[in-house]
Image 1 (cartoon, one colour):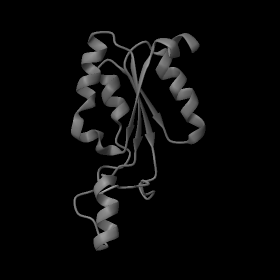
Image 2 (cartoon, rainbow, N blue to C red):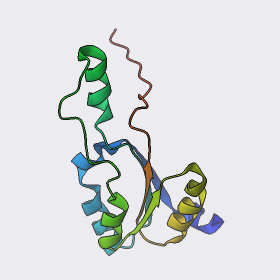
Image 3 (cartoon, rainbow, N blue to C red):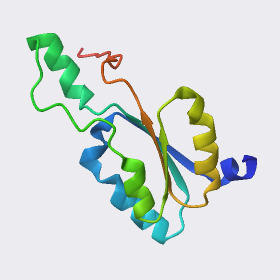
Image 4 (cartoon, rainbow, N blue to C red):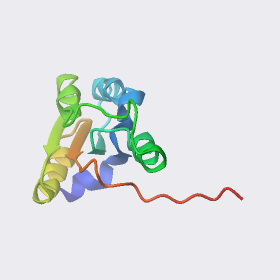
Length: 125
């Protein structure tokens, strides 16, 4: 795995906001050109940047739910990349090792708890 780590590019995607960027099409392009990028996605099945603040401010949320457990990893695999689904913390390291060793674009789709609120800070000054 050490050699794979030395030559790999990694990205971290937090939340299911990945829906908006169509990264599976990017992964198809990367696969076609042999670029080995490993993405790690925290998939909570919601638009947390909208859902939690709405619930805090108004007591409810509107149009912030996505399909829980969406298999983005299968989309990447279907487009020529490598996909991994992680449902338990103990499965993360082996999934990362397989992804970095795959030799093609990979997405590690880590299912996370939608009820956990992102830590937030703001500096509006």
